[in-house]
Length: 552
Image (cartoon, rainbow, N blue to C red; front, side, top):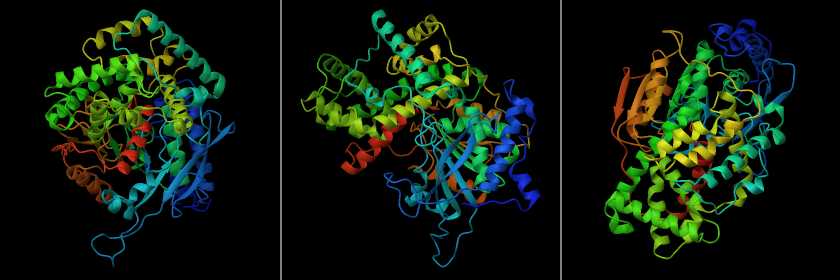
């Protein structure tokens, strides 16, 4: 979701432990450059182990506290050519506090670095070390250096771009659930232009922005941190390249947490995962509408989910005819309510905004759904990385008729997200560089240290079946389920049962038997959060919605 030891050349046995070749040999690598990439990873990790990370002040303008330190790690753009072009990944760290919350006189032993990735593709983990200030994370922050980083392509880490950021967050825009043939042709043309723009603005090197290279980068980062074995936590898409890492480098894993797992089956990457995601969002949208209906006294949007849907569609129709504030059309409305499909603590503010709009006050809706020009560069970058990684990772249908057939059928039963998911991913049909073949994620018994998988049963962004499939493929893994809940990303959240399993694993290495379940966390109260909390959550919502639509 994700210290520093400057490492020299002394101790050849320790160094070899830091840069060992991937277990299982080169046969695991799914492309003709397999042997070269395997050797390139070893070379890059050896160099990183020698160089370490030179920690210093974090970049100005990022509002990091003074205690947080930042640095860079150098990785090859192409692991088949470790002496070729290099890129730098930005890294952040907050050192382990050592504070025992129960006994101030006792110092908690440091357990190393906990590296985190929040998903995407396209999300940055640079702010992750700040999570140690939250009560739910203080025990973990006492024992671990909290390490975040911006993956390749993201933020300052050799950033990608596919179009002028000033054009990216434009509004208002339509979002028909039953698009006409004319509208489809317009969106096809946009997808084709976007794919061309990615190559034009980012160059041929864009082919090297892949999940496999994200896994290789993670091993170089491990070596740069001076860690013989990796302790890693990935959320959403972070679980996918974390699973690739576990497959390629099982002997390098100390502990791994997979929070809200992507289905890693090769046939699912990524086209079918998106189809499944659209189905799951429909169910989560129904959960949200049922919650609003139970609180009709506060929102006056209807006493049944069907009545709430009627009012939502009424708002869509009004916005299609006359965008709110000249900024918010149906597409912006859908984006705001999509974020509520990720996180149920958005439900009160979204419901209030819809209710206020229908009563004649558009301001809350404009605030929550309107474009934020100050975030346009970040949003465009995140979308570019999302597109490049998913398009590069696997084959996609290249015939529009396949997309049209599959999603026309799906939209009959799942209209909420289906077509918007199509337009998000359609550039992959016209992608201008070669694709890879997905790695078959799996480990043999005993090859991988036991890992922890966390999943909410009604998660829409990463449907629950993906967690079950990941457990099946990673031998010895344990699955903890938050039953009846649907928040995307449950580690360190409001569910103390889930947090208990997380703490026991990361702090003591303890896991339950093969599976365990927690009761759902409490539903949100109908009262809206305070303004500051709303602003923070909306900022995170924009980041997650723009980069984790596949979620991966």
